[in-house]
Every structure is written in structure tokens, then in C-alpha cells.
Image (cartoon, rainbow, N blue to C red; front, side, top):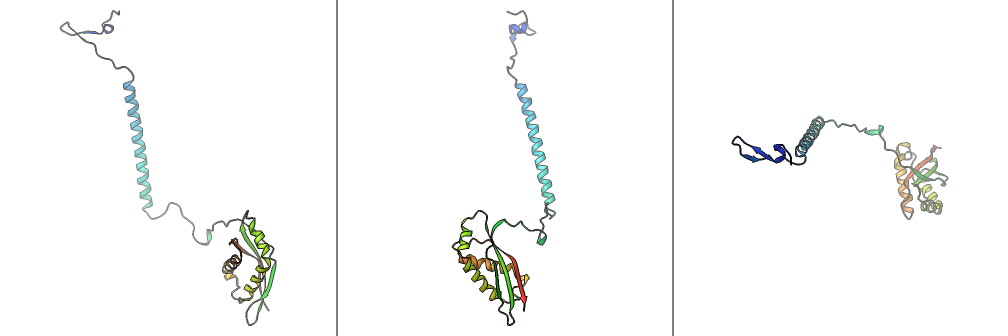
Length: 184
């Protein structure tokens, strides 16, 4: 048994009577409260900063200018996909439908998806039909229609025409290695 009043759990008041000893809290109640207070302060600071950022961004965006400019027109072009090419069509020679016909010499390469093993076989099986179709196509056009300004349209028409011959539309791109229209 201890000699001090605190150890005995007794407390004397002015009347000389004894009062129950104050109860001490066991554990870290004050520490937990302090930790929760700091967590609340940190959480409040984060919410405040996020709110300020959102308001600032909304104010900046209301001025009508986007934050990043996207280049429009010819200066910005998406990279074209890489294809494998069927190059064994050879040169095709014919004449235009004009009253004074022009001579046409064209060499075409056909682009298809990389890794496609069926398309080269399919194109090789129809090479003679494709050469005949291309010769007929160019002989039905005028020299003015075959001008460089119409080159993209020519490529699209040829791609569609040749894809219609195949069991599946495998040709993705038509390239002119040579397209000479010579007035005679």
C-alpha cells in the first residue's frame, strides 16, 4: 500500500471528509483529438485549394480562348498509316478519249494492311483483270480530267473500282508511281 493520498484514491475536502478521487482517462484521448484536428485542417486546406483552382480555370475559359490551340488547315496533317504495297501491276499504256488523244503511261501501287497474307494472293490472282480494268478506266477519261488537280479523286475512284473486283475490299490506298499524260 502506498503512503500518498493519490495512491490511496482518497481526497479530503475542507470538512475533513473524504471525496472520491478524480478518474483519470486511460489511453491517448487527447492525442486522438489532436490528430483528428490536424486531419480536419489538412482536409479543409485541400478542399480550399481545389475550389480555388476550379474557379480560376472556369474564369480563364470564359474568355473564349481554349487553353491549347489546334492547328487547322494544310499546316496540320495526321500521319498516314503504314501499308504494305502490291507493286507488280507494271506500267499501263493507253490513250485518252479526247478528239486529239493524249498518251497515258501510268504505274500504280496498291496499299493494303500490314500483315494481311490473303490480299497479295488475291491481287496476284486477278492481276490481268485489274490491268485490263485500269486500261479501260484511263482510256475513258479526258486529258483534262487526268490533271494533277483531280489526282485524289482518281485515286478514290480506282480504289473503289478495284475493291469491287475483290472478294473483300482490301485495298486501302492507291499510289501513282507514275502518271504521265502526254499530248500528241
